[in-house]
Image 1: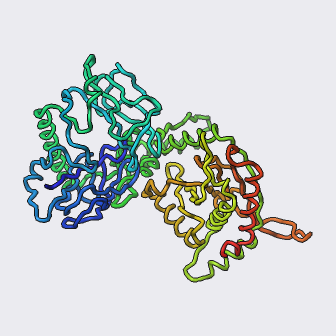
Image 2 (image 1 turned 180 degrees about the vertical axis):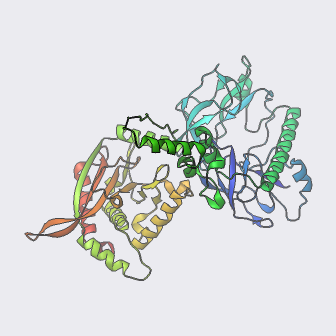
Length: 534
């Protein structure tokens, strides 16, 4: 039987999504795990995979179009299967077969229509369990649609989880600090005084109310899908439609900006976040003309200070909140200390020039730093460690995270098994991952599993700096710029090239002598690059 695939909810704040690219076309054979499309949410562009086998029979949302969560995205079924009735009614597999497959309905408990069971949400594509960091509501509180119920820690970040229902909070199923699998009962909402003890004890994912309620929900979904299809068609036929990402729309609404006045810099003139944040009202407006005339008159009068206090409040993004929380935890829980060493870069410069003189070869100084770090970590695995309360974990594999500045903050893509890569392989992988990070197309798996981190601000002219350890790593290397200056060689003052690096260490795992020995080995590799090619 054909399966309806609906627009997934890929982030906790996502209300609509945009199909950036279809990777399959009608008639293609689909297997479980195949990537169907790239979908742009309010946070990033993410790959959306199929959880069904079959043939792609219908595409409901075209490339570049946006649609609310749960709108008809596609239909997968058997080749040649007639889905005309399905498209008309939207009732194939009435329990809403979507990307997230859920168990069949439970007959053990009946849920009244006015009671809503809220389960542990799947807030990231790799999330299997979640931890309740903080409850912002308590049993007995009135909850409105849109209220933040709790802060939930996923495998990537701590995210605010809002309610999509209104009522009284009758039951909390997962206490603060406790973890539970996705779809575990998180909370129950309903009319004040309702006894939900039986529901809490017997509820299983997929439990529904009586059949009449279920049919009503199916009918409501059918109507919603039909309206969505009509609205999508109308939007497509409207020439004055404004194309904007969901995040851009939200920021514009918060700032009171009319999207019709904003020029989009995205694909096909699509308005993106940067366009809203950099928007300046047109100077050609009548009010601007009056201001210009006033300024001309003022120019011939004595200057009278007439400044005004101006400040801007920008709501913290989830990425910024996560960065703040994790770095604060690292700084205040891990006893940091810092070791600084200066490197003679003359040989490194000469070696790089020689390597880059080869056809189709491009190596950066940062690639050399990564390679030298990986080789030094193999000789000093204590630096490649992690602290746990019950044990110290010594990693004998080397996965180096490379800090990359992106529009909203900082990401750390990870080079897996870095010590096994050549300089050119390191360069190619860093370029690829950094590009994905800046384009918001990097996958969560590509940012996981680091054992050591490198932060390089040398390209910005920073001579030396210290970094906060990227936990659970035990160390992070801060790399400064190459500076040409007078140095002493063989008793003579000559012009040389030097670079300062600083190693931040967690004193719980890395003692001073251990960190110093690592830097000595690192220095030897950097000052004699030929040793890294052996």
